[in-house]
Image 1: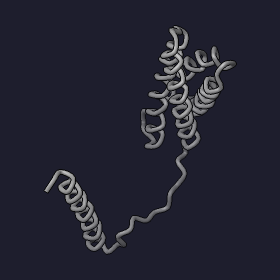
Image 2: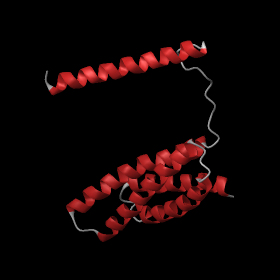
Image 3: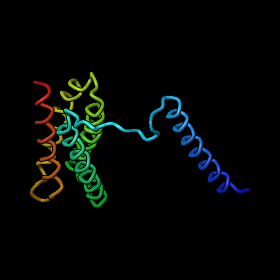
Image 4: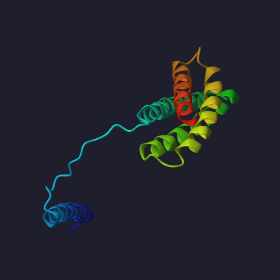
Length: 152
């Protein structure tokens, strides 16, 4: 038996075990094995969406900035890439905290507002030459405004 066959067998065993546990739990509680409940819209959904959009645009902007840096030395673009990197990390955390309605969400939103403001400022320097820079700056403004709604 090679490593591939061993992994396939182990994965299959885990799937069967999980299915068995679900069926056993359903039988024990006399409930259907399928998990059913209504999905309620998260009260922070617009904040979650704004943070996710900022992450998406920021990653594209960062990729573009790194490409530009590889082509020539460009100190201002390096500073922008650092601000975008901060924003991507902060907005990722913000989206997660908002998803779970964390008690730390308001404090994180205040920090993200500062980070988005810094990122927007740097991206605006390149918005006339680079479309992704304008899109990232605009997404920072949207995320800032969504954060402001919950921190007031």
